[in-house]
Structures are given as structure tokens and as C-alpha cells.
Image 1: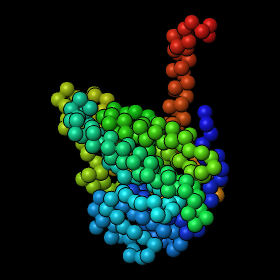
Image 2: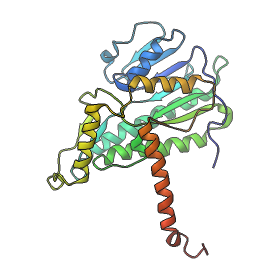
Image 3: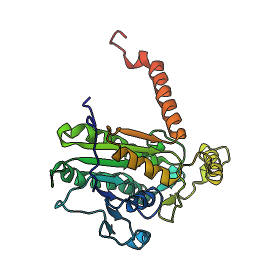
Image 4: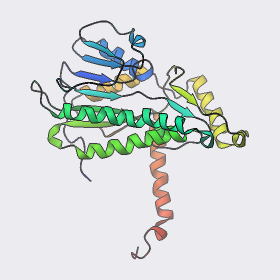
Length: 284
């Protein structure tokens, strides 16, 4: 396969960042971090610009309600962070719920990235290239009961981002990084966490989704294994600014790293288990 992110990336001292979903969580923490760095320039977006009031009113910060921009300037870093979780019994999901989830998680990410690429690859003022951080999740690596459309959106982000990363020419210096956090301590508002209406056939305490809910709720309440949004923000800043190659995939948190490794090892065992069926007629 074509190699990706082949050259070390050097973040310009006055880099321009575009971040979606800055009203809370990772987006808010990263925007706050960048606001503390006087030479960095930030385009912060949110559904409601009033939620960006925590950012200072300075010439280096632009607050927007929509994820749109022109091509008269350069973008150095794009962080596709906007999204919300959709949980519940898949059989009960409406078409509107499913389509809105995919529109936000996948098509929003794809749309912003596609608009950013021609801006990044065009040399403006002596700078060319950049980094696109597409925020996926542990949910883009492993599937769990009760979150089918959330997983669908994140899996789509993973495959789409990898394909695009292999399309861009190495000379463009455009780097794609799929960020895969596990649990993050975020204060979800009403739109950032949605729930499908319960299905009567899935209410039993022995149903896999109900059992997972109990485990997740314990983890959320205790905070064990949950990362601070500020830690994620610091990591993204480090990856962009350290002057090294940008990884294609970036699992964040010990939980994600361990489960990703277990998923890969399990996949290898599954492959071995179906080898005779899969390679029929090829002599092994």
C-alpha cells in the first residue's frame, strides 16, 4: 500500500488552526490551549457562537458558527472534533436519528477535510502542507452493543481517513492523523449525547447492551480510566509541534491501546480459524 505521512512535520511558529466542535470537551480544551500561545492563530467553530465566549477576543482568534472557509489563506492544522454519541437499541432507531448521526460524525468530517486539502497543498507565503486530525474513538476500532450508529460513523471516519491519507502526494506534506481516544471526561450537553427510544424486546437485565450500560455508568461516575480533555489537547499539540512524523493512527489512553491490541490479536486468531475456508482452491 502507498505509504502515508512519510516526512517529519514542522509546525509553523504562527500556525493557523481550524477546530470544529469547540463548545465543550476536547475542542474547548484544545482551543483554550491554543489561546494561551500568542503566536498561534485559531478559527474556532461551534453550533452556537455564544458558547465560545470563554475564548478571549484577540486578533489571533476567529469565532464562527459554521464550518466554512475560503481559499485565500493557508490552514496548517484542522481538527475535526464535532460530534455526539447516539446510544440505544438499534432496532428502535429512526431513519432521522441514523442519518443525523452519520451526517455529523462522518459527512461533516469528510466535508471539512475535503475543503481543507486544496488549501493545505497550495503554497501560500512560503508555507505548504499541514496536519488533519480526525477525531475517531475506541468506537472506531471495536464494536460494542447499544451504539451501532455511533460505531458506524466512527468506523467510516477511520476507513475514509486512511484512504485519503494514501491518496495525497508525499510532496504536498499533508498529514492525516486518526485520533482514537477511549473515555474522556466531557460534560455532554443535550445535543452531544442522544439516546434512541428503548425497544421493549431489549429491556431485560441480561441483554448485552444493558450490561454494558452498567459498566459504563460505573466508569463515568468513578472517573477511573477516563482522560481529561486537557490531556488530549496537550497530546494533539505535541504531535503537531514536535517536528516528527505524524502517525496515521493515534490511540489515546491505556484502555484504548490495550483494547486495540487485543482486537488485532483476536482478528489474527479469527483469520487462523477460517484459513481453510478462506483459501479454498489455492492449496493453502
